[in-house]
Amino acid sequence: MPEPSSRPVFRCEYRGRLDHGSAAQRAAAVDRCAANAQRLMDSGALMTAALYFYGDQLFLYYEALGEPVEPQAFLAPLDPLLARWPQKEQNCTWAQMYPIYWHSVPRDEADWQRPKPPVRRCGRIALLRHETMFEYCYHHFAIVQEGLLQGDKYQFISLHEDLLFSYFEEPRTYTNIRRDPERPSRAIDAWTAVDPEAHFIPLPGSNGANFLMLPACFALGR
Image (cartoon, rainbow, N blue to C red; front, side, top):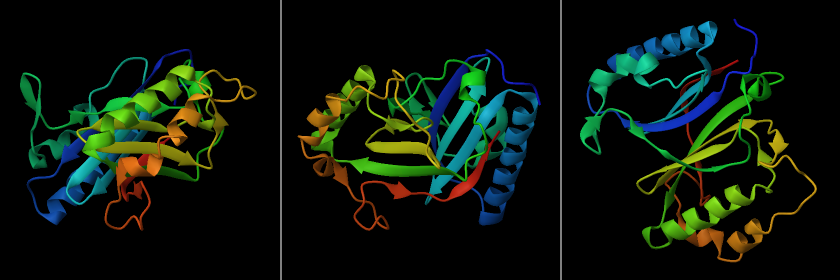
């Protein structure tokens, strides 16, 4: 495995939906995808790749090194089993999610390398209320722009339609975008003032929590 370098890190999140195939066919395709992802990690093209599911829906997080990598580079075995999403002028098996919230920006591969593997690589989703969805986006964009709120270095939240997908790791590595732990965040005060709980519709199985933890198809990294 190549040593960490100054190569850039590209963080990506996508959403897919299983629409074909038996349980056995789906499981076999997932196994082949995990093996493909591991090969790309061994060659130094990926640092992390994690795929989670909620019913027939799939949520993907990965980190590409040096240059962008398309999901099909390692998830091609799933393509025949997936529905097609309308994406601008074409239909795609993987719908790109739009990054909306994070606590750190990788400077390069060496900066982003974990000192040791995390205990857990976690995925979770949340459903936003339509009437307050863009207020949520406004405040989270403001928090990111300010860059002072402390949180998990590896957390990454993206939006597609009215669904949020969040990747994070445990134990958490606390930092902020500006890498300045002394200055307080004012943007978080504005967010807490507008009743954060009112922006979410709790999903079945979440016990009333805003986010629902998801089981993993695979969660790999180095």
